[in-house]
Amino acid sequence: MTPIIGIDLGTTNSVVAYTDVDGLTTTIAGTDGRRIVPSAVHLPAGADPVVGERARQYALMESDRVAQFFKRGMGEKVFLPDGSPFEVDGKAWSPEELSSLVLRKLKQMAEQHFGQPVAKAVITVPAYFGEPERAATRDAGELAGLEVVRIVNEPTAAAVAHGVDQEAVAGKALVFDLGGGTFDVTIMSVGADHSMEVVATGGDRQLGGVDFDRLILGRIREAAATQGVDLEADPWTLSEAMAAAEDLKHELSDTQSATRRITAGGRPMLFTLTREELDRLLADKLQEVEDTVRYTINERAGLKPQDIDAVLMVGGSSRIPAFQRLLARISGREPKFSRNLDEDVARGAAILAAKLGGELDARSQLASLPTPVDAASHGLGVSIEVDRAGNLANEVLIPEGTTIPASVSRVFGAASEGQTHVEVVLNEGQEHDLEFVRELGRATGALGQPVPMGYPIRVAMEYTADQLIVVKAYDGQSGRFICELEHRYEGRLSEREKHAARAYLANLEVG
Image (tube, rainbow, N blue to C red):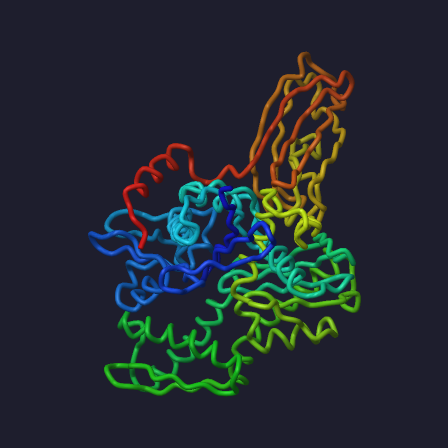
């Protein structure tokens, strides 16, 4: 049977895993023995792309040819902080294309492991990703030659892996997922039978470990300036300092003080940072995280902090002690860590892949494990006229936090006298003001005859477990079908662009 793999496509690191028929989950290593692949792509002159640790090492020497943190730009044309395109040798690389190279690397690792082709995968994304970001992830999988069986939220996958490894606590669980570039907080309801249902999600897809590295880099820059050295003037020195900042952050998770040697102005400089100083640097970020956690608990889940029965820490940046103390203070619970912070998201994806693919032996423990029930991370609505002047607003039909799959039907009135057509506009967002939501698509249909103002028009919306959104409009009196809008992972790239990208990438080998 062709294996279905689970992939954690991370901002800083990516992992691939597989669950066999007996329910045993394995994280797959490459030929170099590494199971964790840095999400970095080096595009050398006149040679094929290199993905992983070697690519990250080249960031010091050829920073203009190494792409990192492109997951933050999924669904957008660019990902660089200054809004400029990432161009190498005249070609502008999209986040989807760069992500596809990482996925191809993981696919190759799996194929070497199994000794046969791999064509299907479950890929995880931050819970707070919207439809455009999920669409871009699916496009990246397609460009890598993978059929994306399902897109799964990272905290859900991590909770699944944790629940399999340890006895899950029945009640309300908070999954705190802080990675290299994204932050999620998810409230789940866990049953005694290991069933899991997402109650609410919140987060920030532009917050993570790389932001903390940049704060430390700012302190290093200040220290260098006291010696008359401008780090920005030398790309090599700046890259070295950035690597040192990341190392300092990691070491301070275990020690109270850390020191690194940095070359500044052609001479060595020792830079020391204490955990107390790091906490002060992170003060604003800690407040942002606390506000998001409390809002998700109180407003989105309708709970109080004392209602939380367990806290699960996921993602490499959750190792930072300040965040552990923050979660303990909010919840009154000592946070628990998943067995392997760096691999459990991929392991959970692999477990769900095995269940979705029907590969599990019916006698295995996982076969009886209920499939988690996810929730809509953003509201879904339609545009309606709210006054005689024709002003429009977003009418939410499926609120954020709604358990999926979900379906709803609502009757609206014709907006004008003699109306002959209906236009359905699908929006993503909880807000009423259209300025603060994203349009996902639209469809138009004929009523068949002019109708009076207020004539009933029924709109039905369905959001499936596969995150397919279907909106249909019907004549509210006769029941006659008017029009339909189907939205599923329609990414930013057009079919023509995807065809061109596939043709270009097909000629490249990924090292």
